[in-house]
Amino acid sequence: MGIAVGLSGLAFGAAAVTAGLSVAQACVLSLLAFTGASQFALVGVIAGGGSLAAGAAGALLLGARNTLYGLRLADLLPWRGPRRLLAAHGVIDETFAGAIAQRTPADARASFVTVFAAIYLTWNLTTLIGALATESIGDTDAFGLDAMGAAVFLALLAPRLREGRREVGVALLAAVIALAAVPFLPAGVPILLAAAAALVVPGGPAPAPPASPAAGDGGPSGQEARP
Amino acid sequence: MILWSVIIGTCVGCYLLKLAGLSAPRRLLDHPAVRRFAMAVPVALLAALIAVQTATDGGQELTLDPARLGGMGAAAVALLLRAPFLVVLLAAAGAAAGLRLLGL
Image 1 (cartoon, rainbow over the protein chains, first blue to last red):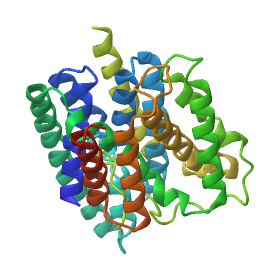
Image 2: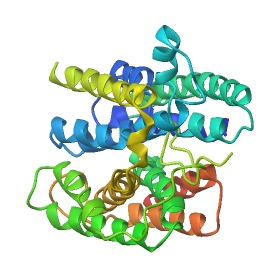
Image 3: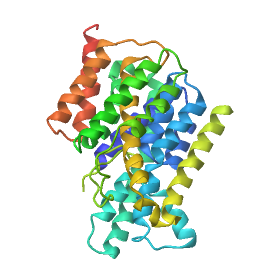
Image 4: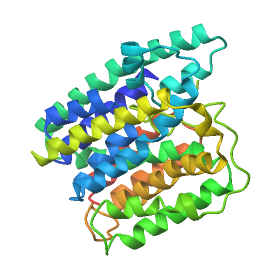
């Protein structure tokens, strides 16, 4: 898992600098936002010359799933005050997947703390290395890093598509909406518009509460969460 | 300066979203419509990001870059074969870099 997180961190650092962010800006995002899919979404929109507001909105929409994780983890992490404020920063795909896979609340807490610390260090260190390296290399397209960004998203999406037909329908409709809107709307906005697909595709029965981490939709690593 | 404020704003927003979950009443999750929408939004956003990043150079023009398409194809094949995350990324970057080396 560490290697995958590290590689995603390198890819993020590279993508951020390629998009025109400074090394410091890339590192601040990894240190303070610390949620991979959102960070990739923000720099992805900026890279396209999209509006900053659209980029931030996309990042926050993707970050909203951490709220759901927090709702589930609240029972397992009964901390208050400063410790809760600190723990909140660690609520991401991987820590969620790890914590709820444990049998006892004590194990869940131990897992949460360990995974949080390990990923936080790896993600931030590799972001820095990726950003610095890209700054000195210049053209990262030659290394295929542009394809790697989209591949991160594809790897995050794949497990969700295996969940059922509704997910596939939502994904296809979202892709069509986004591509159809690209020529007419400022960069970034088509992606937000596509979120409407989540509303209009009729659902079957409501999914069960997220009792198991069936899918990672991208933590800092953007890694598939499979405990 | 504007970029910095957007970055800080995104950071604050992402943190507050996490904190809200830990602090909010769990009953919210019990509402089926909320849950269904919340589970589907990432699918829609990710699919849209993939489509846009693959089929544009970031601007408002749809362009298909053969090397990038090849990279995505390689990633898709790797995922179908249930390859680990790391292999998927390396396949995508390797295929795109290789195709560019060949002059595509």
